[in-house]
Length: 313
Image 1 (tube, rainbow, N blue to C red):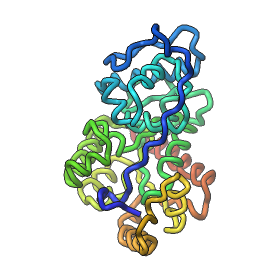
Image 2 (cartoon, rainbow, N blue to C red):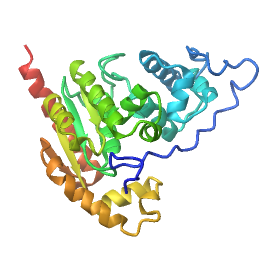
Image 3 (tube, rainbow, N blue to C red):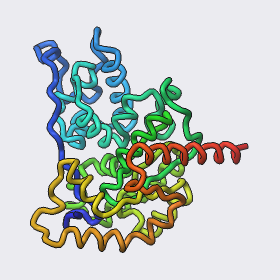
């Protein structure tokens, strides 16, 4: 259930434990933590780790973030980031997703061979991609637990296009976690940054798949701007499935000390349902399941890309 500290209708995510880095690179010759520019990939690093190191360093530098700033946003140590950027850390998928979110992207995008964000760092679609979405931006809507991150990340990986999370872009812009942002500045400040980041994506004609915050639809101006620049998809699910998915992610707080938590979730679902139904497409994730929901989003993105290409001069 939503926390009092997060008016978006979503709880700030918990920070999972940092992956254990191998002992290689921990001796006196290892790079110094906290260096603003990071380090190049170490000689002899496995190709996938060397590739990841370069992608992560590229994205961080595009955002003009120091290692210290990224470490604070991602909830990891500077030392750990130095090891990742030098190809010495066998980072876990969960921890890499945390770093990706802090960079306004995802683990799939950092590991892939497509663009990271906003057309920067283009290397062409990966050999496993099924064909991109052209110049279209597909925005996923829904309450927390709808599957926006999971479905969006998998669909983007299959298409070979960027996957973005608007909350991650806002946190990067603010230079702090979303939990800190709400606690210090409040909901109005978050909404302003959300509008500005969406406008930046629209102005840059960004393409790919973007996961939006659960409460974006409650801001009329922002929702209207999103509908003008993106194909919108509501990932619908039963309230029980929203609840179950959040708990399965390891977050038991929705039910903590809240006797009417499920009743409140149902009320929130009903309050926003008419707004979500304004989306261009609806994908019923409860009825379709994960794999078929991903298939459906991939199909929508592909069709949107073809329409966009047809309209281009």
